[in-house]
Image 1 (cartoon, one colour):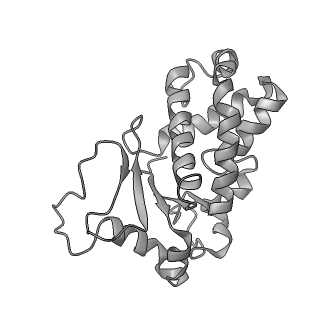
Image 2: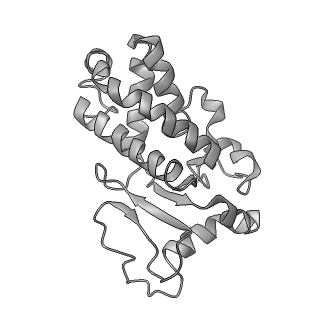
Length: 207
């Protein structure tokens, strides 16, 4: 899991105007235009949504996680933790968390991992499974479902504490603490809420 995660919120209509083979580059070029010098920072990495440095370009933004250093590993560990503890969680809460985390940082069926399946044709097909083109693809309708699921999940986060302690605490390859685990889930809740409820945009995660 030596990958970083670059998470984008994007106006899906605008992104769809680019040819399929140009969409990944369009996201990168909008948030870090090629005309900037190699040594020029896009922005201060202060956490939260980072908007493009070029005035007037406002159809996408990149999210800088407060609770990670940009690596994908913490997200993978949190997804694996949920896989470990989910059967100990009340079914109604489990269903909501499954809906929320599915294809964000957890896959109910690993064969559905967007890094392996190609994302349903929205991006170019993945030709090398060891160098995936993307880590997640959530169109606006999917993000809206996740934002609604988060509203059901958030009030019940404390109910995950005992299952986490039983199945994940102290294990290598899992979040260090329950607080770290829920902090990351809360950030994903903020991300889906911003993208769906406030803008109606989709999410794309690139390595």
